[in-house]
Image 1 (cartoon, one colour):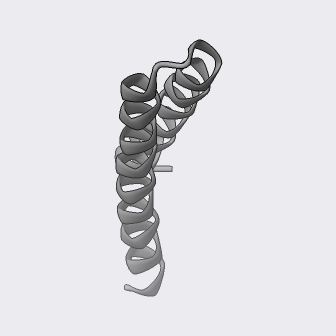
Image 2: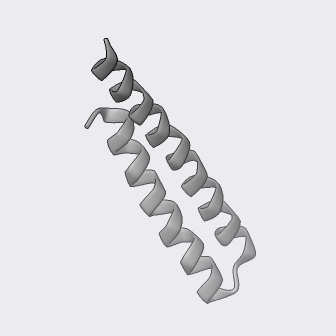
Length: 58
């Protein structure tokens, strides 16, 4: 597992926590921030996954 995968997964979790906290508290802004952070984490983790796949091929 490379650093992009790790950081991405951490951001996904933090984003999901914010999203749920926003839903529970009725804070739409916090919920949206969480969704965005989750999405950024997914992209970063996906990039890390791609790097690992390329390493395996090369």
